[in-house]
Image (tube, rainbow, N blue to C red; front, top):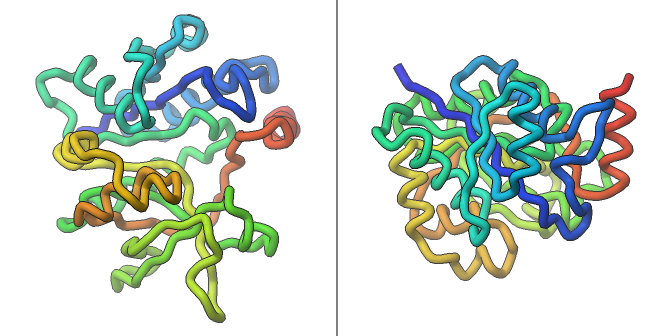
Length: 244
């Protein structure tokens, strides 16, 4: 039986939306909404990992658990790993789920769906994606595409590449990737020990580091598409949805 630790990395230094984790949505900071959605999933202990005392205070005021991590991490995965070692130094948890703090309206089923591929032997990392239905997103570099092969399991793909370009070429569906990752603990430790890879730097997508090192990433295709808050426009949309 796997034991799951859910870690939500949060930092204030967003260039497109300053102080993003504390942005007010329906009377609560965005990070609190993300915390509650992750808790509602009911899959394990939930911890917010941050480098800012204001985020810690907001999470604890809402009754959640938060841990301070270093300020010099280059990726969310590095912050997640440090938080994991701080709250679970004895290795009790063997699956680590990295849930982004900018998914305030996330359906609680999504974390469970993300974990599903790790029930089987084979994948080192699991994530989620959805078919692109908005034509503008097919060419939008902020909409990360999954290039993948079938696994033989309905609704599940094996990732071959991730890109900001429009890919793969030709007729057929395109799939949008969401930044939620379930790691086997050994895979997360291996991942953060690697230097940023060539394709990772070029595409600005950290999951390519894992693929370049030969790690396997499986993708669960989902129907519920969460609003990712990266811009002021995204924030207004999230406010409309959650207020309603």
